[in-house]
Length: 402
Image (cartoon, rainbow, N blue to C red; front, top):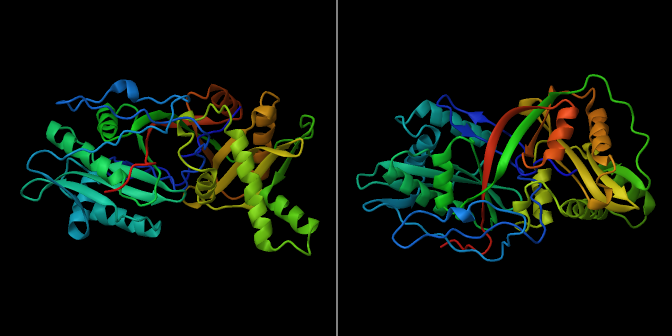
């Protein structure tokens, strides 16, 4: 039993009245960082804008070392530009409501929201027709862990769709230092998915979003852990390190060692993972941890590490997202050495016990629909599906901005 989806935590479902969905996940936490996975490359036939669809879906055995650079030109008579000032407002307006006149109130609402969340909107790009009209736009928002979240206008006409793929491709590689770009799209929005794919993205998986109420009565304490399996929280580990060597351990020493232990536990959990295997190999585990830590409000008592024979063997990470009054299951993952022993179920019940009596209303998570053991366990523990999204990604390693 391995993780729920790690890369899609945080502040979900910012909606405007037009129905556009901004699924913002501050952490992009939990990108597995093994050696396999991701990118065969987009293959464009000469004289055609049709991509080789055989390369669009990733499997765990695909290597991310070989990548073909995708560079698209805007339609004839159009210009691709990075937008600021009033042009940026127009571009954002098209992303929010692509088929309607720019609604200043709606744009102002989103800008206020972005300011509140301290989102960097400087990577806004658009394609202009000769008269200066925005015909497609995309927004790349940087996130901790060298990641980028993408948003783009929905385009239906062939000319604007070509412009859309062009602006998506350019915006996604415009954030210096980023190695992973991600987007979530409604599963039935085939045209939007295709536009991102022509812009260099590949389909990762479909995610189910799940939710259950916060427990009002604590589950029974877990006393029958399998032999040689133990758990310890981030908070408890730091205390143990301080007490073990009080004369030489500074606060920074304890923090650094705790991070190393949790990184080792994350690495162990990525072995033979069923959860979004196409993400493996794109980011370092240090990047992943930075994303996890930035998801919601970090509480060291809610971050639990599993040990097997005193070695790191998995984690359970919860964070509180105040605006949703919800605790998010940021990541759960186990090493092969402790799978199939009932540890996942016990670990989640331990987490539910820790959450009992805390402020909030719900527990939320997102899970790779290919991960059937995880789906089965979540349903058994009272989680129900509340929505679905298709995740697409672009590996930005070795794709230099120009």
